[in-house]
Image 1 (cartoon, rainbow, N blue to C red):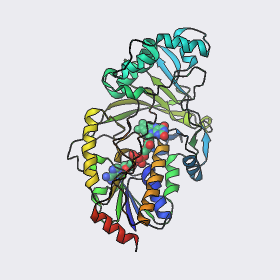
Image 2: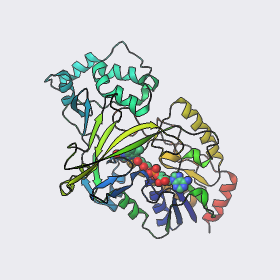
Image 3: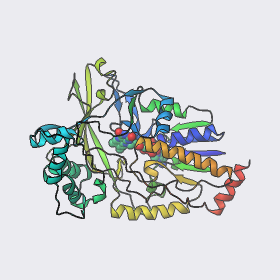
Image 4: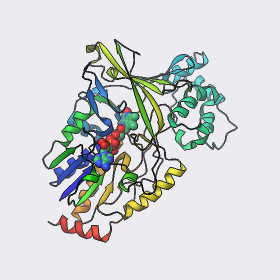
Length: 422
Ligand SMILES: Cc1cc2nc3c(=O)[nH]c(=O)nc-3n(C[C@H](O)[C@H](O)[C@H](O)COP(=O)(O)OP(=O)(O)OC[C@H]3O[C@@H](n4cnc5c(N)ncnc54)[C@H](O)[C@@H]3O)c2cc1C
């Protein structure tokens, strides 16, 4: 069968490979001039430093199969994400750990003492937190909330924490030891030659044709099915309105030597307009010493306009209502499955993206064997939270798997059934 895949990010690339390996042909289109979607990396022409063009990406996962999959296409170099934060004129370590707590309160507490101390700081009068602010206050108290969460959240989301749901802070990273590894996953690393090279190798399989600089809207073609990893609302011509996103502006800084001494420095104070500065040579510590110069990016968050790149789905009540209407439309559409972060309007880390793409391809092949069409969604985009958490750095909030995949329309069903037996 002949498929079309819209988007050459991890979602599209993994599905394309799996389908091609099963003997199908696949046309992958992407309107950008490069592959790898938002994970795109390239060497800076002036310095040779590997730049993460759409913001820093650190690979981390608890999924052994995904880790093994990625390692088939690259050498993963050891990398541990250690984030520092500036708040009120001092530098702290994130996520909030024993070092942070002792620094903030000027103490030398051990784990048990600190646990009791933070419990005493927490606002016990808030029994059922009604919003993000109350949730944070009920967990860490006023001082830590103001130092690390309030200003950063207001900058990241452009909203007061009292307007954000409490659910965003369900899993506040708070450690009562000196572990400052930002992620708790057992596998973590950075690809030796960048993410774009991984995606290039994933797509390098007989049966896959790649067209860059090509909008799905502009191509014709008779495809048995389309896997669409572009924005869900765009597929329908925004006819119900635009789903809300935050976008990012990156301000480049070039300097000699070492600019900030670490890869990521968060700025928690609201008075500082940027959220963080990332210095990209520190994402590749095995080669950082080779470069005399350095390239950093100041990151600013704002509401996404029509001409901007959508980064973080907002997913508040209004957006979820519109999403639910788009999902209803999508369930009536023929011959198309919506995948990936934009197709399902969820924040997805790379490992979750790859896992979902593998599962989507597996489910597609299983259904084709039975003469059935792939479903419009492989997961319920309305399930789970799906928004990036408001504090510190985004971390995954997986959506719940869809138990009953909706049946395809009879027309698609018949067409695919025929094609599956060719
Ligand atoms: C700032 C930021 C930092 C992040 N950091 C991390 C991190 O540290 N670790 C981590 O695991 N994850 C991170 N992520 C998440 C990661 O970027 C996503 O998991 C990943 O990009 C999802 O891949 P995708 O293929 O679903 O989407 P994308 O990468 O967005 O790919 C979709 C592609 O579709 C193309 N497209 C869309 N519509 C059309 C159309 N109509 N026609 C043609 N082409 C189209 C786009 O050009 C794009 O290339 C981060 C995300 C952001 C925003």
